[in-house]
Image (cartoon, rainbow, N blue to C red):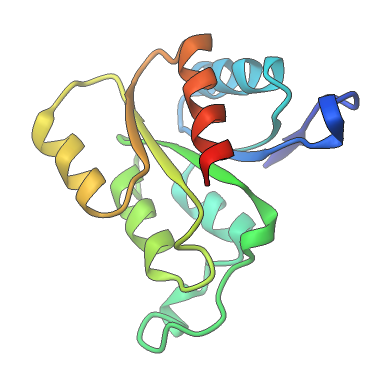
Length: 150
């Protein structure tokens, strides 16, 4: 888990994004693109690390009663890879959306494969967007616009 952000941000507001990807190169690319757009970035190499950072690693205790779980104030957006070992981005999305305090946090799922059924499944489960890898600076501009609308 690495937290990073440039010390100088415009208007003092730095949206905080959690970027989850098992591939180091992809993770570093997303981090660089986001930092270039004045985002504060925390990276996680898998779904479990992401859940731990969000305070949801013991969410099975909260699963049925939907009580206070996680800390929405930690991040403004989550970007997760779809295909990851252990826990897919889709499973991570479902766990986040199941939590009452985290379900309003936009989750963007990224994948190198353009599979319509996969895209629809993620959107139906509450994903804000589905983007194809590799992410480009223009994608990050879209993300920033999405954040300003929320």
